[in-house]
Image (cartoon, rainbow, N blue to C red; front, side, top):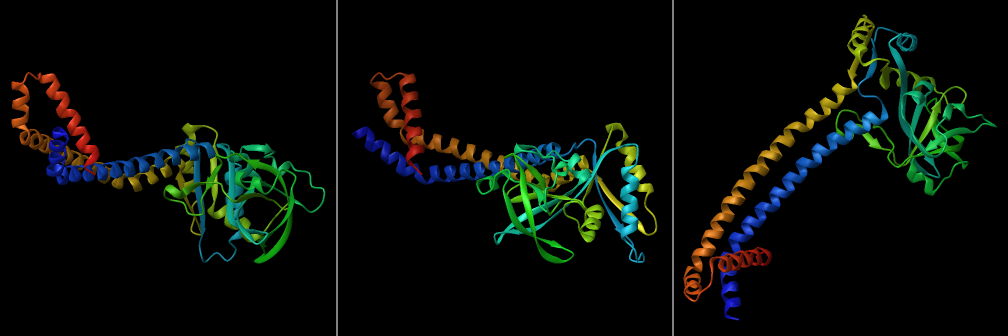
Length: 336
């Protein structure tokens, strides 16, 4: 009982100091957690992009047409066709992300042209991902849905959705031919940071082709803004970027970035925050250790007389060490 009173008295005396160190350690944990979350996000972005396309062989580009060029459609189609026919090119594909309505609920509509369906890795858990090989029976459009929609729809389900075509919202009949895996990812509408690639939720993939769904304005937007090229050999990447630069003219400018450089760009955005949080955590850790050592010294000094008596009564150094460590551990547990 007397020992418990001494312990409680010691905890009360050191309580504020223990709480201060405990609070510092909590902040250190939060800071380190934030830093590692950013690091893991960078790794996830790199991994997810590489699963979607080959990061070592791919380039993302967009085409800017000068305002003095009254006809923007033909130049964009011409450049797209020319790049497609280049001997270094293995695959090329364009996409567009829009909105669709199904039973008055909004979903993400991802339009892929035929080239893009070969470029991107769209693995399905059931059904088929051969969206452009579907043999139409009537006027239905084949679609692939994200995995979370499988609770509402199954392969073979036929529903009606609303899509914008020629600037008007129209009704279309669609049939589900495939359901994506849980770990399916695709580009986001916003590209440039950690959110550049996102998990596909509440999404449907629609084949963009005159046999299924087509809109001329959407076609130009896809080819000019959202096109990715994959070349055959990695060592040809620099030569291919030189080729893209040579396509620039007075009326057309091609802005491009290697997928690997794009990943580095995302990392550089987060790098300052990672460094700041790690330095902050390190400084707090040092202060916490210094504070903890001060508390230990104060704790032992407060009970010097008791330890002297225990030595006189025959207690060994090992027993006193075990006693001190046990009481300090209990103090740390009880002080918060």
